[in-house]
Structures are given as structure tokens and as C-alpha cells.
Length: 139
Image (tube, rainbow, N blue to C red; front, side, top):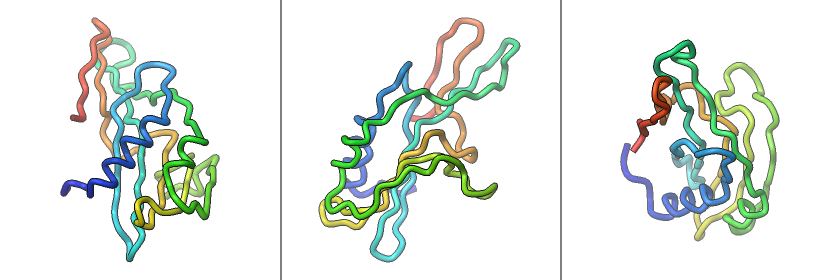
């Protein structure tokens, strides 16, 4: 995938600053694409996979809170600000998320911050059941 525009990198960094982990936050992913003039930017904390021991292969999500006031301030001219509590249907791989539509530096953007990583993304962190050490799989 090509490098995102700098303003998307900045938006992702700024949005990540509004995520407050209750433990150590797993690496954060960003999926983006442009449809017509609007950019869709989706941000999520990756899952952590346990390797070894009786829970080998178990994947967990990072537990965090999201500063909604801070997220709202990331965009200019917000026209929509929503919370989706559950997946819409079985094909909805985004699941629960906060959604904002507005502009950022003049760019129309639909920003979504997910409660969990989509299932089609590999874990971003691997933790050893034997020694508790972890490795970041995403860099």
C-alpha cells in the first residue's frame, strides 16, 4: 500500500492520542481510501495473540476508552457524529465504532474509530504464554 497523504498520517496520530488504554495499547492500524472527493479513514487497535500454553492461539482486543470531545475536535465542520453499538449484519466487519463526517484541512473525510480490529487483519502483537514477553508484529 502506498504511503497515505501527510494529513491522514497526522489525523491518525491525533486520533490515537484520544485513545486511552486501560493496559498497554496494541499497535494501531489505519485503513484509508478515497471515494470521489471523500476520504474514508478507519482507525483501530490491533488484536494480541497468545502463543504457547493452554490459551495458544487466543486473540484479545485492547481495552480502551475514547475521548469523544477530543475526537470531535479533530475535524472541522462536523456534519455527523454517531456511535454504532453493534454490527449491522454478518457482513459488517467494522462492528461497534464511533463515526464522524466532516473536513480536515479542507479534505472531506469520514472518520471511524473501531472498538475492535476487523477480523481480516492479522494480530498486531504476539505475546508468549511462557515468559509474558511480547513482540509487535506491526511496525
